Image (cartoon, rainbow, N blue to C red; front, top):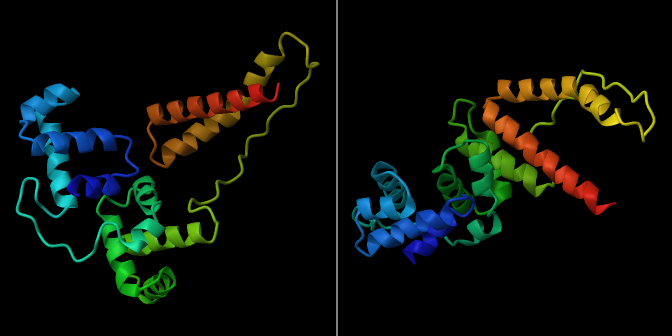
Length: 215
């Protein structure tokens, strides 16, 4: 039951299987050193993961179990599984979904929670309010992310026929200014150069795969 609860809490994490395996190994009596060697992690990192797991389930791994008022498999959590992903993507904090579901359960419905959040003073902490806004947008089929402004860089039209050997290079030169602007705006928003480069590579690869399917 505890491991299932953790899997729900870490459902959108790419390391969920490893983290659950770490906790399972620890509960079976393995030491931090054994787990670190088994999963190629430092002992400090293993301890951090297990300590976080202990907090997520309310104790029972490292500390005494504390009774929880809300079930991790409540109807609300089943209805809004993407809340975890939204909280992670918007860096609202790993504990925010727990607060959100507690507030949602008290309100009784998402509509009532939205109304409550709208009536709260502006000085109120914004994590639950922001998460409510994101989920509300998702419920209405709108993107929770602000629309990206249109690039101000003009893309030069091709000046040679489609079968010209220099056309590929010409396309790269035409796209480069817009790509540089996009990368700069991403960096200004807080993304690292490595993250930006990797994201562009993945997106380009996905587009190339899609193009190949049509030819």
